[in-house]
Length: 138
Image (cartoon, rainbow, N blue to C red; front, side):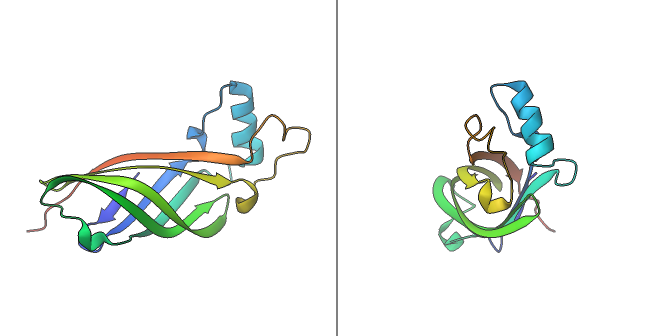
């Protein structure tokens, strides 16, 4: 669920914990409910800014390698992060952002029991793919 302020290069998005996927459905359920505690922490959120946003021309049909810097909160823990991604503009105010990044479960207080750690990676791979149409103010 993205939003942005194109004039300032600000960005925020929400990643539902229940959207994390595993090959084995039972492991996915255990991870989401027991380790990520999705009932208490249903979403991960990011709020930040694009670095060097002044180089992005929203009136041009183009693709830009970008870095968003801000606060990522997962499992009730907030950390400053830099997320690399690709920002595509269509010249008409439409913006698409794609980003793939990894986080460590330990860094966000997600405790995986020792007897399960061999079956579940400590690394969570997060993919963001969002399209936002800019609203023109009159």
